[in-house]
Image (tube, rainbow, N blue to C red; front, side, top):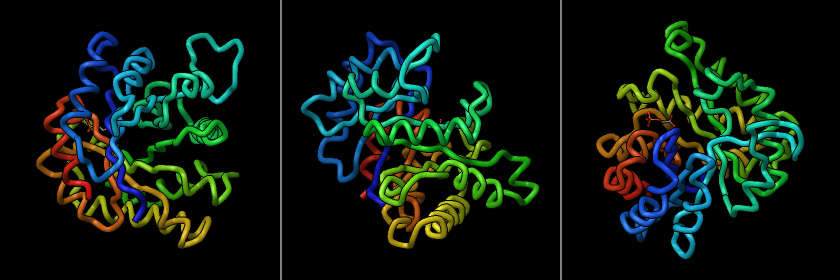
Length: 250
Ligand code: PGA
């Protein structure tokens, strides 16, 4: 429904000195891609990544940003800094940031607003824990995350946002949600967006699945009507695997 986007999330992997060659490798391996190809890298790798992606189809993203424009926020990186580097995308609210770095629905919302105001495309992560899934509250939890994430955001802006459904129990565990489980929640997210905005706006939003998506399972996941791409962790660090996933997205 939305535009197909396959985004790698390198997390805290790869060195700045490895970045240029690796992005070139990704660009070569995914040449002719029929979807948008994005590499989200650590802050310190971004400038090399942007240099390597120049003149190719690959777009570059960051893994976080701060919601204030500037000031006394030691260790933080602003949207203007990312824009200045010619970064296009930014991951917001990844479960690892929610879990280890005190990211909340409120800061996620502020970060989305800041990214949009500065022309960055936010990739907003939502997802439930294993306990929440087993308690049967998955959709309730995700509805709340989506409503809070999009609070105060206009329809025109909402259509630019990418949502990544990432069940926490599937991230880095090798345990993928089945294609049906993933589709059910992605369709549910689209229904929430349709309620908040309209059917036509909801259809324009790219909804990705993430969580142990790999070369072997990508095709089945991406064949589902409400899964418009993937946010790929582990498999984005190997160009051949990443390229297989990209090739499955058409
Ligand atoms: P994974 O990570 O593909 O290694 O499970 C996905 C993510 O956390 O974005």
